[in-house]
Image (cartoon, rainbow, N blue to C red):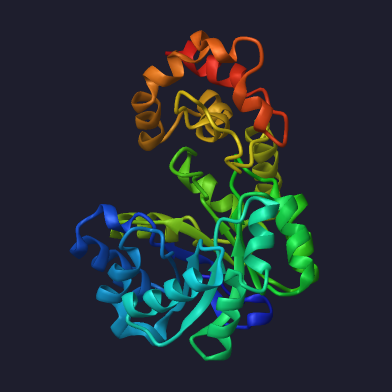
Length: 337
């Protein structure tokens, strides 16, 4: 396992972090085994959020007795001071800890959300007060708009950013990471499999591993998944492999979707998932979870072409900040059935 100082934070973090978002979907004993196996095998970064169902409680129940062995990161998606303050207190109780190593203002994708969180009565004030009280050690931010995050960190009020970086979403490489490197900020990449779409798994993990990030968060729910993720990082990426991975990322990222979720489909089609998986699906096929996604949403995707309000101007495309051809991608997915 590779360990590096976590930017200015300084803590030596493992290159692989345990993403606990999906733990509420498995039996508690399975979650306990996975988390403890991860700690036993060198993973020392645990990532969760107040909004991940009972993920925080699972962490408190299963590994709080080993609290000195891991760096604990959680998040609040509240924007106002009072709600964020209450949520931080709940997180401390749920995870059975006196201190959160990293508290992140979560899922900030709109300018108005950032402004609300940073105002005098915003969530950032709650995080700062918790830090001053010794309940939080560091403050970060998460989001899906790398070019906006690159602007927002220039105020110097955040020490860390959590962002997408995978073979199908390489955009932070040019838009965000250089700004963070210049400021020696803690850099955490999430969704190396883009939510379960990207294969082959080893290449998917090794792509962000080849880039200048400190921690790669992988959502794991079993000992076998922990083993598979650790195995993908057993050796360093040499220059030849790095160039190959970057060429592949350029191809698989051609859809250009950041998953900012500005788009909204009246039929309920999860457009970012269709966009991001479109090239991967064509080139390699999908993991089982990805195939399940397309089966689950088949009826909605098939109905896109016949939805009358979108005949002239697709409603989703009017909302996209990147002006992407969403309707044609969705209809291509429909044709593949």
